[in-house]
Amino acid sequence: MIQEKAAIMGRRQLSPGVYKYLLSSPGIARTAAAGQFVQVTAPGFFLRRPISICRIDPQAGTLVLVMEVRGQGTAAIAGLGSEDSLDLIGPLGHGFALKDAASHALCVGGGIGLPPLCQAAAHHGANAAVVAGFRSASAVILADEVENLGASFAVATDDGTAGHHGLVTDLVKKHLEENKTDVIYACGPMPMLKAVAALAKEKGVECQVSLEERMACGMGACLGCACALYDEKGEQHYGHVCKDGPVFPAERVVW
Amino acid sequence: MANLAVNIAGVELKNPVITASGCCGFGREFLDFYPLSALGGISLKGTTLNPREGNPPHRIAEAPAGMLNSVGLQNPGVQVLLEKDLPWLKEQNTVLIANLAGSSPEEYRAVTEAVEGSDIDMIELNISCPNVKAGGIGFGTDCDLAGGVIREVRAATTKPLIVKLTPNVTDITAIAKVAEAEGADAVSLINTITAMRIDINTRRPILHNNTGGLSGPAVFPVAVRMVWQAANAVKIPVIGLGGISTWQDGIEMMMAGARAIQVGAALFTNPMAPVEIVEGMNAWLDKQGIKDINDIVGTVKPW
Ligand SMILES: Cc1cc2nc3c(=O)[nH]c(=O)nc-3n(C[C@H](O)[C@H](O)[C@H](O)COP(=O)(O)OP(=O)(O)OC[C@H]3O[C@@H](n4cnc5c(N)ncnc54)[C@H](O)[C@@H]3O)c2cc1C
Ligand SMILES: Cc1cc2nc3c(=O)[nH]c(=O)nc-3n(C[C@H](O)[C@H](O)[C@H](O)COP(=O)(O)O)c2cc1C
Ligand code: FES
Image (cartoon, rainbow over all chains, first blue to last red; front, side, top):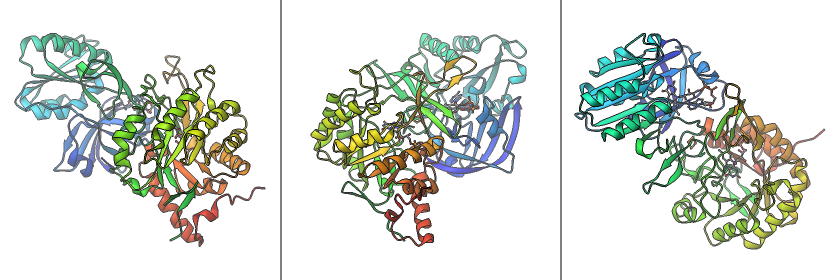
């Protein structure tokens, strides 16, 4: 874990309010793994913002982050120009426990939950299927990127303007019925994760979910980012998203 | 190079910068940034006799130039500190301060007795907790309750005793004097200021506990004022904290009367803050031609 000023090498709007950053961050890129995150300084704000790492290129020393403007802090980050840099701390947390690349993975993303799955999808390449849910066609992001990884890509939209008209979990159900699946990696809103975890359990498929919680330190020091978990004995306790997660086995999460 | 070492209640700290309780766990989290030996001392996560689960999320809310927390003293209990963390901590070459808490005077006493024979160098008594028996009033906001708990703890330990004061009082000097009268060797202040944030879309408080404690640069001027008042009211050393994030803040806090300082929430913005503060203070002293950092303590010239 290090602090690094990452020069913005490229910045592109993917959909309204969603930006993709290519960053020069050799120190973090060297050790980062799929599903880990960084804490980003939002200019003018006290707390850093946790953002998942979308792609890692240790050779080139680069990271890709995809950030959606939600409130004032992410708006301040989005306001930075290409001559600026992002102040990062990372890599943080435990990412996806990646299965053998030859095993069949299903990546399930809800909106801005899709980017954190990209590195895992890249690991499985053509053995990965990616399904993602969005509000409408204008919100769909990363379609080309996912297809360039060799993975299949299917979308669901709430208003039916692209792909399946309905929930992404409909696509998950269909995929599990029709395809051999060894592992599910999921990131998105809690209700989606809960539904995906239930489907995975029903089919006996391993499921890993990436959770969110408000953070201060991002490294296990402040105990701020509590989430209710079951321990080995099935007893409930508060773990911490930044250190124990953000990725958890679905059966550990108290839904 | 100026002398940076300070002495608090007979314990020598190699520099006046201590990391504040609850902001640096049991010391392992910031090791990628610097060894603990770079610090004058570390105040460990608030510890109780038995494990505590803490409050439900959300526990964190942001504020202008600061943050609120309602962690609720989540900790694994004193035995885990002693058995799992202390053997490692004592090799780290820094002053170890156990931050102790409880919900009754008996519990405070029991947790103090548990650390008495250990390698902990100093005790910092967190009296900001609610007294369960007295209907949840904070020990630290009532002179009689505070006096009672300090007396119990004082009788149970020969270790240097720091009493950590809450700012949620009308007169900080009254509680500081109680601590001195009951045998505290030092006071540290301030703990967090009770605060609240509301999500205007859901009309819900952001913190599940409804209220939480404000810290970070937002509270710094309040902390300077209270440290100044306390330092003028008692003879025992005062450790100043609350919102310190730069070396200039550190110098200012010491001029207000603090013999040592603690750095808490600033760690979350800048993990290097404590080390940068030590370096910055040192450079400033050299530039000013001041040979000993102790010479700046309490040197504010009030109007
Ligand atoms: C592990 C992790 C990975 C994440 N990855 C991404 C990502 O790849 N791309 C992306 O766009 N977003 C991601 N998020 C969500 C992102 O952190 C929040 O949208 C962002 O912090 C909101 O900040 P704000 O100032 O715009 O919003 P405000 O609501 O103004 O923020 C106020 C405070 O609440 C916190 N906060 C608000 N919403 C969230 C949230 N959903 N999760 C955590 N803290 C929150 C902020 O950090 C800040 O401290 C991730 C969150 C976590 C925990
Ligand atoms: C997340 C968090 C947890 C804290 N936990 C404790 C604690 O366990 N015991 C304690 O005495 N103070 C605790 N504090 C208070 C700090 O030690 C400190 O008094 C306060 O935050 C003001 O200093 P700062 O502005 O430098 O953070 C905590 C503060 C924060 C932000
Ligand atoms: S954010 Fe501090 S412990 Fe997770």
